[in-house]
Length: 182
Image 1 (cartoon, rainbow, N blue to C red):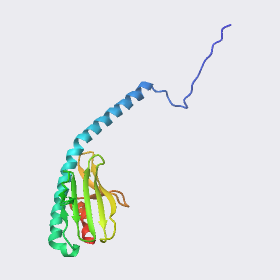
Image 2: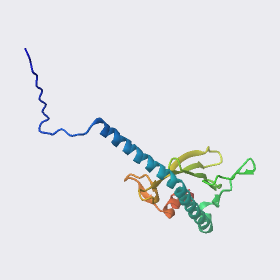
Image 3: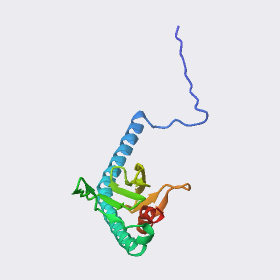
Image 4: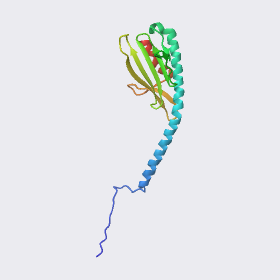
């Protein structure tokens, strides 16, 4: 007695394709390779462009501080100083990717501004002291650095409406206007 079985598969009107398990593996590998090349390219481009942008921002800040001191010093109750910080009588020399900005008259404000390539941002750390008797209040914020797909670099800041672009003048103003408002 011979019994013959027949199996019929139906795919709801869809035709079976010739994709095999190796197709998705190849696609995954190709995507991974493409992502690696993009990360490598980004790593090669981001650092040098960020340093160049940092140098331009520092130059803008220095020019704006000179103008603030020349025109607004009485309103600020004292000058704003750049990289003139001392610890125990010794001058503190900041790293190339760091800038110290201080106003020693009360309310005193000390800013440490740092380029952080790994975090793709510029960190702003503020220490503020209202009176001689008060403690320093420390806060921090950041300005993000954005590298577009076409390798254009820009500064952005978070806002209620999404990230807002900043040119160098607006970034400098954002950093320095706290000295005028104090």
